[in-house]
Amino acid sequence: MQARTALTAIAILAATLSACGSSDSDSKSVPTKAATTEATEAPVPSSAAPETTAPAEEAPKLSPTTEKPDKYEQTWKRPYSNTTCGDFLSGMNGHERWVTAADMLSAARRSDGGSGLPADSEITRFQKDMSAACEGSADAKVTEIGAALYLMDPTYKP
Image (cartoon, rainbow, N blue to C red; front, side, top):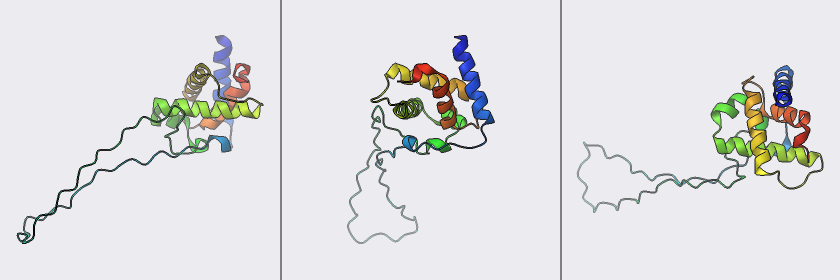
């Protein structure tokens, strides 16, 4: 437990001291499916003259879709390299944080020769470690935090 706390503290320190941003081409955000918009009618001014033609049919009201995203579908639109820890902790929802952790951990493991996806429990642990490390610096980039955690904790390697 003390080793994990020390690794998290080092990740915070590394991200805070890092003067340059990082870019991870494997961790770009994935655009979401377009949502259906609600149809609206133009307002009729009260001073308008009465219509002499038959009234137009009212357009059907469409309700927005509330489809749940797929397990690994990222709905966060900003590239991870431009996403701060403040965004990670406050701007992202739980699904977006989990998918961010999955993307970053998978990409890091591929760079070490890993294949396939890490277990859900590993992704969840990585997400929790990222959240803990991000608590120390809202301005740090999540790519820096993720890379630091991966490099300092050998249990994440394939």
